[in-house]
Image (cartoon, helix red, strand yellow):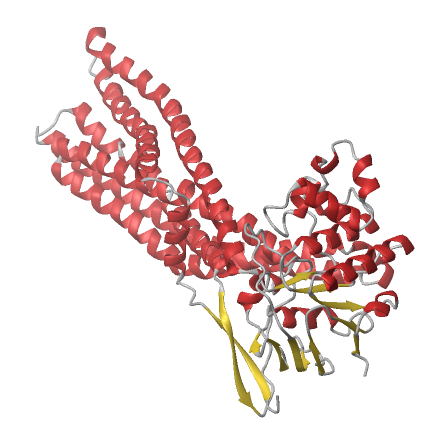
Length: 580
């Protein structure tokens, strides 16, 4: 090609935060009735408090008139009933709301993983591991909190307020209007005071807490490297900076909450003063009796308990919206890669590469779309602030291997991401049969095995099925034998069904590397990209690597290796040194 290609990444449109939350809640599979059941239980709990306040007020005032004990007996029983039922219905409300939310979260996680798999690996490869963990962990939990801490409390506040207003209106209609006005002021006023700042703080808070997770995970997992290079203090400084941002977001949420609490207190005070005044006037005029007037005067004390949850519900709603949008961004597939002739180089996506990722998704079918050629035309990559790599050119046909050589930090892994279609090149292009590589090719026609590709906390067989979901036990055993792990698997207590610890920490570095090579062999993609395949391998392991590459070439695969070792170079037809 004689022109320089500028790569522009086009993403599928991301919906607004409200639409993202609605979509996330629909994905939970939560039905209307379980939420109504939780609201009814919460209404009964706080309604019992309102009933307790009303009956207790009537009982105290009535007792002052020195009636017969028989006149008070029923009221005393009702007081005990409301006192006991409040705790009982509170338990039922928590049981109903949390059961609904947790069941919904299971469904949401399953659908999120399905969407993530369908979106391809390009999205994940441009994120840090900590950010991914935060999105599929904390952010998903925050969506579930929308049910427990936002929807249910708001519903309870509405129903309890209506019940309270109905009771007071039945006794003194004007007092009911006053109470309704004060409750509306407390509910809508606190929501309005909280909304704007809560939205800003929630978006900043969700990002800040995700950054805390990302920096903390990076500091923990790279602790050894930081000690060797003497960068421990810088790593901890990044964690502390992220933590300060998270604390600042919490403080930003607290400011509107304090104003809302003040408005709530003022509204409650106005309701009590108005109720007492109207009750006194009604009693003096003979409109109501003293005990019923007392009910009107004291009932607002309990009525505002439900409305007091509105500010926290609004804050949680915005936190859940921000979290849902981050999840939506994670699972929204990249629309493709557009190439246009230009005289300048494009700016790369402003993202941080993943700490580890395996671009081989859980594929159920043995799809093997053949590729005739893989062409690298003056391909160069760069992250923001990074010096672009030396442009490279090569044309590979089925059964050929390219080794990209260079020291650590020169951009070899980033170059693989561009070849896989996960990130746009700085300049030049990667082509499959003359067409530009797109994110749709990542994990399908092109499979990438990163140097620190993840080993999951599951069985050996399931770890191999990451490459292809229908891998049989015989196929797995054959692949493990090809990489020299047959004796290792035979020595395991449960063979292929032996559990491996999270991250592969229960296996040695060499065993982990060979396991990843076996996974690579089982992937059906015609183009395989392998990052540092000789890392942690002894002589036997390097012989196994040679056998694997030879076998892949015999199958007509195109193999691209990036390495700073000399051993893989002997069986690569082409070699490119990024040092020039």
